[in-house]
Image (cartoon, rainbow, N blue to C red; front, side, top):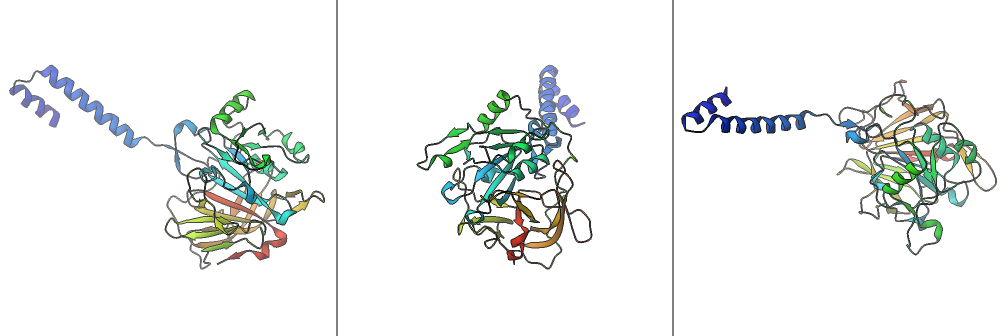
Length: 345
């Protein structure tokens, strides 16, 4: 109605109908384009529950092994990870930890790492994400696991950066490098296995505060990961948990961002020593207890993983699978023999 009236008015004012039609057509095109922009629904990350570009919706993640020895700091690119696992790398050296950083959007990663070797547990965990493991070697124990049908990996030969450190702390990976290595090794960047469900976790539709009386402003693992003295401190300003180790806030060397998480999942996980050198395998296929922590509160949970390719599910005390908040997640595999040393307050 409004456009018809404008056309009649312009005709009376001496404007040609052809010009009016062209102007109206252009206007309608702009309006339609705007409407499409507003109404188009973006894809959602199965790892974070957050919106992502449609072009990476079917892209499988990568799991990058990052050295967590003090000499390896400062890390590059860890703040970009969607999920970060922390676990013992060895029962020797004060149970030094290593990080496994999982990225959905990895093709444009800048300098990331430094890269180090993988362990058997890392291969098993990538199975539930259909992720490609990015590492530099590992003990001979991993060979059996890397030969399994679900396992995909790229090992070594990544960029060396002259940073003044010993050689083992100088290997980093870039997104374009991964794109090239995927192609050269005929690795699919798309999922190669049917996912158990569309999202890895169950996500709350809106940011949620747990209905729990258990306060969780401090997650102190310093008496568990005694070498790194890992802690997570709740930042009320951001509503996330900032990661600390070696008595300092962990910040990304690339852009100064703190390593921070919306969700914290702690798994009480048994393990087996493989030899006298400290190599070990976590029993991540199985079940156990733990905590889910978000927004300054914690609830006790149980966890269960049925097979090497099955998702690890988390359950509340009533047996229902828990939902978590949208955002980045820290998962700590805390060894059962020191689980009692965990402090949450």
